[in-house]
Amino acid sequence: MAVHSERVQTQSPESGKAAVATIEKSAARGNGAGTAKKSARRADGPGLGSRLAPYLLLLPATVATLGLLGWPLLKTVLVSFQNLNARQLVQHLTEWNGFDNYTEQLKDEQFWAVTGRSVAFTVLNVFLIMVGGALVGLLLNRLGKKMRLLLSIGLLFAWAMPVVASTTVYTWLFETRFGVVNWLLDSLGWHSMAAYNWTGSQYSTFFVILLLLVWGSIPFVAFNMYAALTTIPKELYEAARMDGAGSVKIFTAVMFPNLKPFFLATTFLEVIWIFKAFTQIYAIKAGGPDGLTRTLPIHAFLEGSGRQHYGTGAAIAVLTILILGVLMAYYFRIILKQEDEL
Image (tube, rainbow, N blue to C red; front, side, top):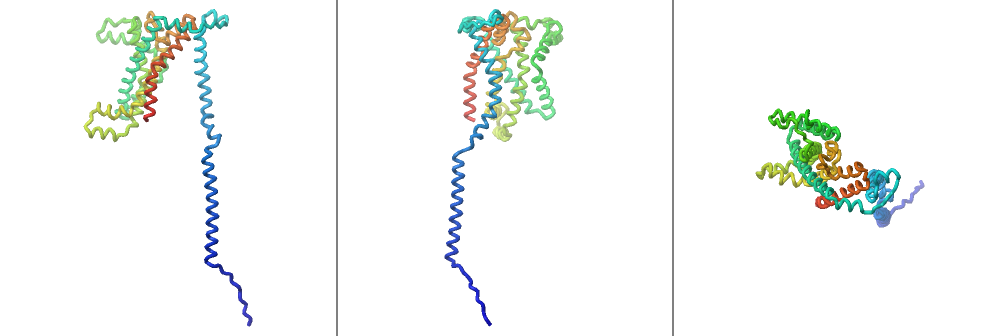
């Protein structure tokens, strides 16, 4: 019987180890190459499209801002260096007079009287708005859901009312013969106020304007105050009460430090809005009586469009912007410093 033997090929342990080592080296080499490629890709950073994407997204808004704000501002500056009255406007003449319009206004006592009045009026308004708005915001934070909703609706209606409509309502309220305010004061015993003319003197007219501006601005501050209060952790209040702090101490030690950015930003906006207020002042008395309630925006309009001295009006408008910038420079520096600290 023939026996067929098959030849079996075996592999020594040493050769197997060598093969495994070879595979591991190849894998390591491949991983190293992949890592090198990834490192090179990371070193290169994002592509050109990714870097340009934010600027492309901002481009439409930038162009719109320059078109709607930048061009009118540039046009106003150019007109302020011209002698532009009715004759030049009709005949399409361009008469450059350099800094004459600015020199004339800077030497005018009425301009500085209006400037001082505008600054004092702005400071008083902003102070009352911030105090009133902060108190209403604190009240919103303490009320229950139903009362908070009711108060919020009332504030929203006051805030959303068009400026001309609200000014007309206040004119009716303080009307001399049929105004609700005079009727109410007369009913309470002040019979001398039955036919009082609220727009007959400087201070009474400013009182009506001030009341209108404060009433229309408090909702904005109140809503922002309430929103800022909701960001303060309740644990801080509890810790302050455990230390025996009262309401005043809680406000000064807990609330105010956390609300400081809110107060800075809101005050900054209110100063700008009040300083440039035009519609309310013009609609009530047009800067009267005898120009004693003129502020810089009213003064620029009356000198420009009213007397058709458009170059002079443009110069007053530019000076108004510069004065506001000087007044806000220090305050704006505080805001930037506060943002860096945050």
